[in-house]
Image (cartoon, rainbow, N blue to C red; front, side, top):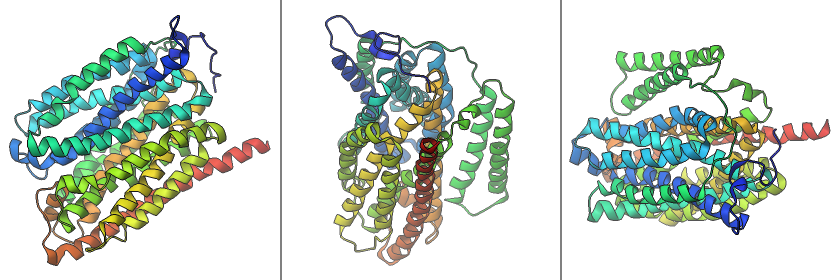
Length: 494
C-alpha cells in the first residue's frame, strides 16, 4: 500500500489548502460537496420507483418494458464504473467528478422532456453516464482528501448523503407525483446539480498524479452484452412464460460473461484489473459488496410490493414506513466509519451484514395482517446494518488499493455492488411472482394494480421465498467478509 503523503505533498485537497483557511474547514466543505453528489444519485433511485406508474401511463410504456427505466440506468453505471474511475486516474478524479454533474444535469433535463418509451430509456442512459462519473470517482476523491486513519469516518458521513437522498426521494417523489407532475422528479436535479457543480469548482482541487492508461472498450462491450442478455431473459420470465427466445438470451448472456474473463486476461489495460485480486483481502471485499447488493437492493421493492399489493397502501404511504430505516442508517454511518478507523474495517462490515440478516428474517415473517410497526422495525434494523457495512467496506477497499489506482479500485467496488443490485431487482420479481400469475405480480411491483384479498395470502408466500433467497445471499456476503478477519489474524501471526 502506498503511504499517504504528508500535508502539502500533493495528494488531494489537503494540498490545496488556501492561506487563512483551516484544513478542517476545507476538507469539511469538500466532504459536503461529495455528499451532495451522492444525495442526488440516491434521490434519483427512490424517486423514480414511485414515478413508474405515472410514466407508464403518460408515455404509453409497455408494462414489460417499464422496468428498464430503472435497470437501464443501473446497467450503464455498472458498465462505466471502472472506466470512468480510470478516467479519473488519467485526467483527474475531481475533474471527472465535476464532469459527472454536467452530464447528470443534461440527462435529467432530457428525461423531463421525454415523449415516449424509447426517449425516456435513452435519456436515462445518459443520466446514468453522469451518475457513473459521480459515484465511481467519489470514493477516490475522499481517499485523496483524507489520510487513511480518517477515511472511514469520511465514508461514514458520505453514507448520510445516500440515506438523506433516499428519504428525500421518497418524500419529494410522493408530493411531486401527487400534486405536480412526474416530469418534475427530473427537473429538480437541474438546479441542485448546478449548485453542486459551482460548489465543486470552488472547493475541490485536483493535485493527484496522472497515470497514463487506455480504456477497455472491448471488455466493456462484452460485459455489457452479457449482462443485458441475462437481464433480458430474467425480466421476460417475470412477465411471460419460458420460451426459446428467452433461452437464447440467457445462454448467450452467460457465454459472454464467461468470455469476458478471457478477454480481460488478454488486455493490457483491462476493465477489471485482475492484478488487484492478488491482494489477500481485495476479492472478499468486492464479493461481499456484490452479494450484499444482490440481497439488499431487492428489499425496497419487495417491501413496497407487500405494502401496496397485500396491505393496499398507496405508494407514498408505503414508502413513508421505510423512512425511519434510512434515517437511522444515516445516523449509524459516521459511527461505523469511526469504528473502522479505530479497529479496522472488517469487524464493522461483517457485523453490519449480520444485522441485515436479522432484518431479512423479520421481513420473511410478514403476513396479511402483521402490524405495520413490524415493517418499521425491520426497516430500522436493516438501516443499522447497512449503515455499519457501507462505510467500513468502502474504507477497506480503499486502504488496500495502491494509491495510483484508487480510482480503478473505487470503480471496481461500484461495479461489483451494481451488478448485485441489477440482478437483485430482476430476481426479486421472478421469485416473488411464483405464487400468482406473472403479469399480476409485475403490475403490483410497478404500482399499477393491487391484490384481491383471496390471493393476498398466496402472494405473501411468494414474498417469503424472495426474502429467504435474499437471506441466503446476505449470509454468503457475511461469510466472505468474515474471511478477512482470519486473513488479518494470519498476517499478524507472521
